[in-house]
Amino acid sequence: MSTDLLLTLPQATAFLGAALLVALAPGPDNLMVLSLGMARGRRAGMAFGLGCALGCLNHTLLAAIGVSALIAASPLAFTALRIAGGVYLVWLGIQALRNARPVGAPAAQVRQESAGRLFTKGLVANAINPKVILFFLAFLPQFVDGARGGAAWQILQLGLLFTLTSVLVFGAIGWFAGGIGERLARRPAIGTWLDRSAGLVFVALGVRLLAVR
Image 1 (cartoon, rainbow, N blue to C red):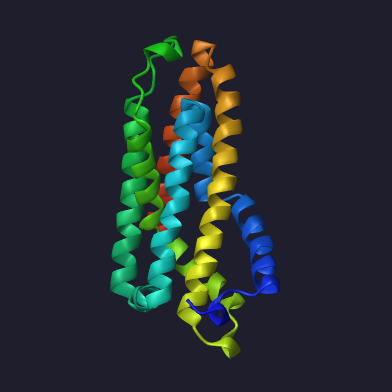
Image 2: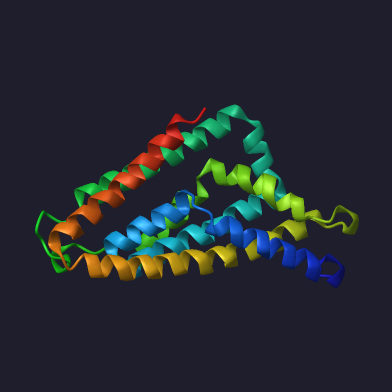
């Protein structure tokens, strides 16, 4: 790639500052990572958070080649994606509720999901979220310098920077939430409440997405 198509230092610096603020702002992804980390520990929170963060690569690629714009412009396609995303989140929540530890059961007796499975769930949850599609379409182009050309290359670079920022932020959220959750889960009653709360968060986010018009 020609150096003329690389982001300039002021361009990258301004974007990183904005991306950090966006990643830290309370939102569905942050809430899911936080609730899962507190309910299932650091490994679960960080694995799911990494999946959510890398799901941004899908939106970056789609935004760069223009597919996201086509989806957003098609009410049928956007509605189908919204329903699929909402149903998937509700399904994740129901699974979490079904697998919640029995009342009074210690954390050691809870069936643990593999990090790979949690990563995949986070990846899919982010990749099929139509709200993220709209966000990338609105956010990334603001930092593209049209006078320099190569808009698609610039969007790819911006998307990669946003993904890296999300990896750091979501990883930190999963780590700290998991640490808090692991201490609270030593009390079986609180552990049961954390499990069920995480499931309810996913269901609520899914229902909210389904209800959007």
